[in-house]
Image 1 (cartoon, rainbow, N blue to C red):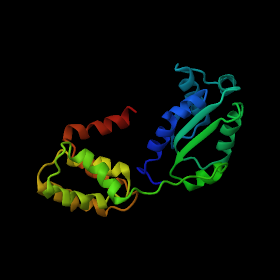
Image 2: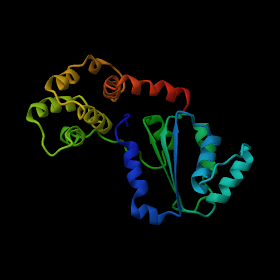
Image 3: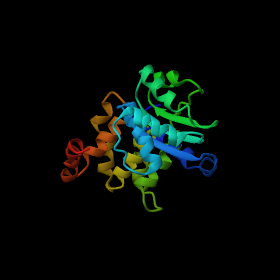
Length: 229
């Protein structure tokens, strides 16, 4: 599904569900992103289970430790935000996970339909966009922190929500942004911004608007985060 559509949030709800917690001997969460390095993923799994820093660099030793950890254990592994479309890398990882007990499960969140086709053991689930009403509910919880909803802003707010494209992250991000603005002209300025004309991922205009309205000292934090990840 599209970025900001709620894939990670849904996976977190499953991961933390009481029945799921009771069913699996261990639960493991790994954020993969665009760097699908099997060695890094194996190390992340080991660190998640042991809760200790893994300093082993030899792949054979890592595989041996992973097998010891997962052997005969029913585990749930979540690989979040996966971009890799290289089948060979997937097979390399899948082979390492076969030592778990029957009933072990792997959940993968991805924007790529190709990834879901490669994995293909269970039918993939594509998240549908939220309804306009659900988006409005998310938006107003952030935008109007008090119970009162100023009517002069509600009408504009609903027009802003229409531009969210059913993406929950967009609705929440814009709601947080508008909570800092109380004047009607400020809301209209966001509604009429040229940023909405930007093509590409549906979440980008919302995130860019939120960034553009940050104080200058907070904007400076982003380059620092790039330098020191």
